[in-house]
Amino acid sequence: MKKVKKLLRKFFIFLFLRNLMFSLKSKKLFNDLGNEFRFSLLRRKCLRIKNIRKKIFLFYPGFPCPGYFLYQVVRVLGMKISNDPDREFDLAIDWRVETTREKNDVLETLALSHRVLNVGCKDISKANVEKVFKEVFGYGTFVDPSKFNGYAVRKSNDNAMHDGKSIKCPVPAVATDGFVFQRLINNAVDKDRVLDLRVYIVGKNIPFVCLTFRSSTNRFDNILEYRMCAPQEVFNEIEIEKILLFCQKMGLEYGELDVLRDEDDRKIYIIDANNTPYGNDFALNRKEGERVLLELSKSFYEEFFNV
Image (cartoon, rainbow, N blue to C red; front, side):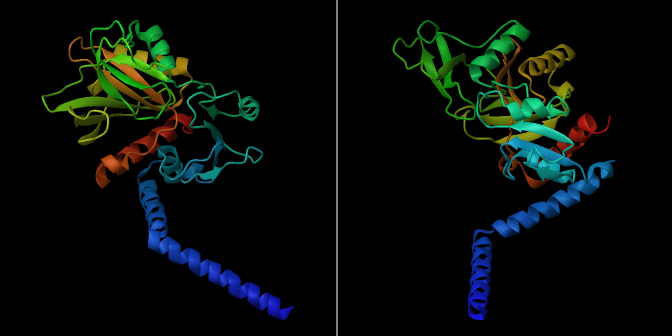
């Protein structure tokens, strides 16, 4: 028996050292420790959040990796994270990355007694975004590629496919299954750059907008510059009211929108909605990235806990 225990002890020590070696080699351990240290520093800059340090945030049925903004927000606020709906919690979110979501009985039951964010957001397909956008704003972007005369963007109806492609219409023989076709919005700010407006939604509030500048020759893939601004700097009061009404009708309580302003007609167009936004640190310098995360965390606290 002693020999067996000795062998087991050596085996577990071997596993521990092997996992430690792999962590060090992949730098994952250092990244995790670095992120937690960064979250701790940002937590000190947040105001009046000490009373939620022991609160529990439930992600269900899915669970986010550390790259998602909401995971980072919850860690900055110092909340504990749970994926167990049978455990007590203080706030929850319907966390599924699918474009369309079936009714979840567990979430529906929890929503009767708790705040469950995005529980009413069942469809973020491009087709549904267009439908709700047209209902709120009175105009839309979709075109028939076989009849439209001009440039259009073909993209998947599903979320987060990142396969947008500009095509010259009319195109009589083009695959339409699973794709949507939108008029190419003239969002150019100069001859070399176009501007996307990434609008962050927290409850009934737009805490900030990120100006995303891309190359006019490669508008779907690259980001040249990314900076924050107040929503009032890019939208008027009526536009802000309609954006929030759009989110209400979509059931979107936390997420982000991609909005374009057409330089020809000066109208805004909501072209995408995302209820599980991923962090954009790859496009930010460290200082600006932390500013985004800090403002998002403060807004999240004010909207859902400072009541």
